[in-house]
Image 1 (tube, rainbow, N blue to C red):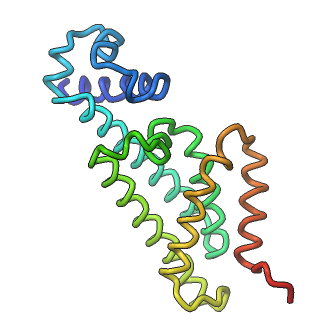
Image 2 (image 1 turned 45 degrees about the horizontal axis):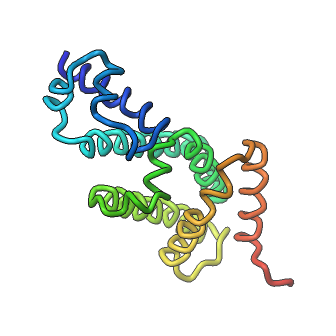
Length: 191
């Protein structure tokens, strides 16, 4: 019962934060939407920031699970990289709160936001590094430094999040990801 109520708070808060943003959503509004007293919310969470943190953690885990599930369906390192990027970009559109954490500068002063950003950045680098190393071992990729290459790919993805996900149809995201990966795999230098 206690866990169910906590989950209900997180889910309702998730919807409100997605609709109105972190700044404009109040604990009063969350309590009102749940038909419970504000003191009940504070029994489970000390602050609005704690509620938001729980929402972000949930969305982060959801994104990681969706990516893993999609990547596990393919075997080629090239396809793993393609599926990773495509799934990530498509899921970001669904995760309004997590996406706002990635891009909204006013959230930077919250230490938990920076921890989430840093943790997820490092996890993405390590995941892509695994694909690249596998590709090198199989003779598919010619990469001297998989860690640095992974860093470059993840950094580029961060810069492309907004233009590739906002207002873009799924078919266009797929096409754009394929074009970007073709450039990554084949380079820009004419041979």
